[in-house]
Image (cartoon, rainbow, N blue to C red; front, side):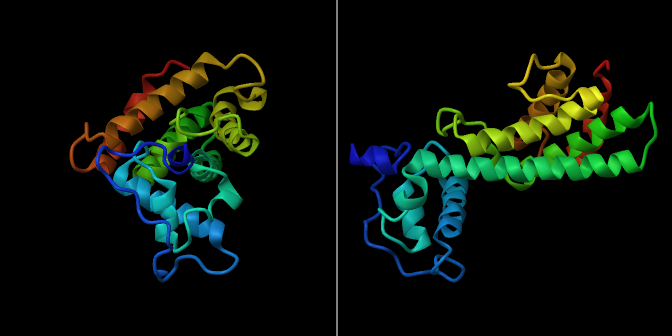
Length: 223
């Protein structure tokens, strides 16, 4: 049962790190920054091991604290992964909103919606490629607490940015009413493109593929 507290899943034969804290690294934990240090360490572990082999004990070791220290801020491994996913949605919603604002400033109706969707699509894929570990955690519902209020709020903000570009002033959240099929279609197209790019489907330079193909994919959506 103790292992369940610290580990989402351990690879067979992989020993967990000792509970004793490791020497602190530059930029690691210092007084008042335990939460931030653990979040950074968690993302480092995810980049190296993947979400399925994430270990809270290993994140604590890299942050230079005891294995029990993360409980104060996150409770368990699921809590820490949920915090990473929440940060992901907060950053993604900001990236989409910034791209959307630039698109609105540079286009007039009726081209406005198309320009906004293309700008958000490029920002979405760019974020996934820049933050692959965090992006992966955001969608791993089996590994996070998707009922967490802070997580839900961040995810809803992200959806609303896209929904507003599709619906205009009628934008709603996923839980506020029936989702617009057009919004879901745009989301599915962009998310699928991002996932394919991360999985290597577009070759060694996914950013170039995104620049070349993504707008064409979005123009196929009949709005």
